[in-house]
Image (tube, rainbow, N blue to C red; front, side, top):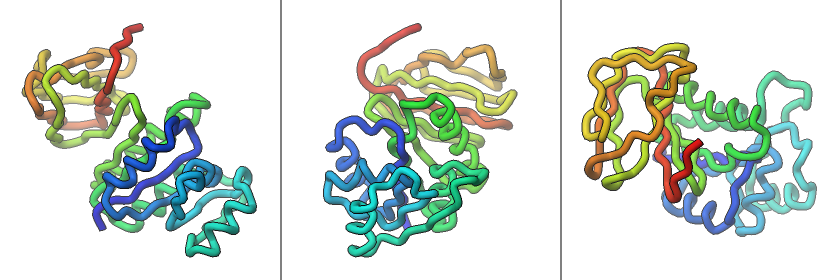
Amino acid sequence: MDRVVIVSGGVVGDGEFLRRIIEEAGDPVIICADGALRHVRPLGIVPTYIIGDMDSVDEEELAYCTERGSQVRTFAADKDETDTELALSEAVALNPEEIWIVGALGGRIDHTLANIGLLVTCAKEGIRAWIIDETCAMTVVDTTYECKGRPGDTISLLPLSSQVAGITLRGFKFPLDGATMEVGKPLGISNRLMGEGGTIAVESGYLLVIHNFGREEEL
């Protein structure tokens, strides 16, 4: 299996963006995390799995999808995992080459941060996972990653572990050689690709790589 697309309950924006992501994924397994069903139903998409405590799912939409083959995994409302975490566990069990997560950003900041942290889970399993929206795509690197893009693309790097050591960057405006990044010192914000790709290598720790699209905004 090449890819699994998880649709989470955060902000998706333009429905056609979601449709395009699913089409670009090829013929993916589609997993909806609970109320994220509201994002796919207007597009006429029937997910492979619907997973969560079902506290925010429209019953008519759920019935429509189950009648057309969606498998439902229902969990108790009082649980330790978020719905997106449960969806990710299902995706990891399928052992795909990649997992693409849409709708994981925006809305509640606690859920956004929790979803970004889930990328570490995939890195530990050796599965490349992405959180994607209309403004950026992000993944976690703990070994080596070949970053593809266009000259001038903005790439930001942030540690997800307390410290990330042995960071080497090649093909970037601001190269690094065996550097260390620590939480609380955003050294890696707003680097840029010099060509159509660059190499990111990490010796230890988990490094969040954010490939930004579109308009530049600085805080």
